[in-house]
Amino acid sequence: MRKSDPQSLFCIGETFPLLPMDLSNYAVKDFILNESCQKWTLERDVEATVFWENWLNAHPDKAELIAEARSTVEAINETIDKDLTSECDHVWQMITESVHDLERDAIIRNNVNNELLKSTNL
Picture 1 (cartoon, rainbow, N blue to C red):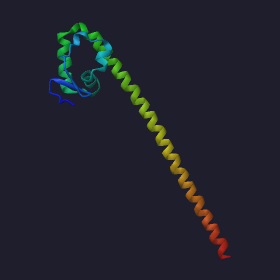
Picture 2: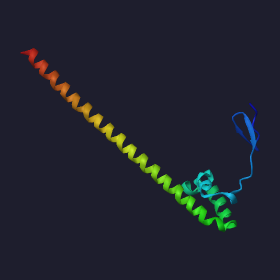
Picture 3: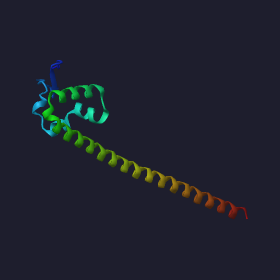
């Protein structure tokens, strides 16, 4: 395995030179998949915000593509959040039902034990 230097990408034992990021040829899907664009859109990352605002100022012709990409990233994030919320609600419901079942079973066992004690003390 070769060591990676700062100007290379390490991948499966080989190094590949990093190419400068040429955003001018990006399509919407490329912006959607771009981690920095995601951070700018979702996390309001300061470094990403400065970069993307400067880049947009220099490339106003890409504003529509960026807007579409950001909108898609936000929609995907909302869908994921809803799915996670729904899954969490389902898990919480199962936990609550299990706790109630355990409490009910404990009460039944306690009642049975009390009846057994009464019958043996007669």
